[in-house]
Image (cartoon, rainbow, N blue to C red; front, side):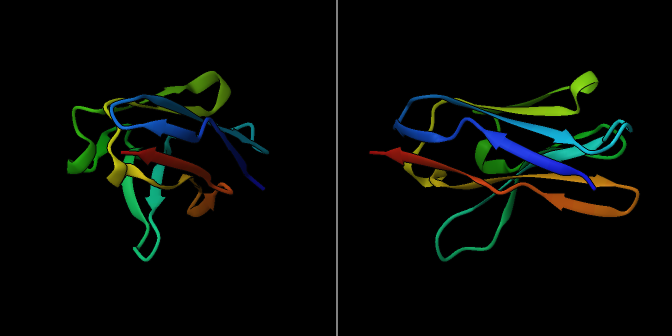
Length: 115
């Protein structure tokens, strides 16, 4: 059973930066497909940035040029560096991993950007 633990959320002023981390445990396999989604109040969960199973990168248009996803394969960990944060980035950010056809979610970490 893969478990995902996120950290790094918090409250930041507009224009500030945060770095999220997500560490996967419970498997000895390298997880290629890992990424970040977010859900704002009253909205559907949406992709923010992710590595696909083919190790390609996907970014939401709204975060391109501001957010950067990276990974440490040896630790099955992904990071999300968020710069130039905007109030509309306020949401619960969830880590997602896909392995052998199963999808896994972290518990979520709150990111709040004040104007």
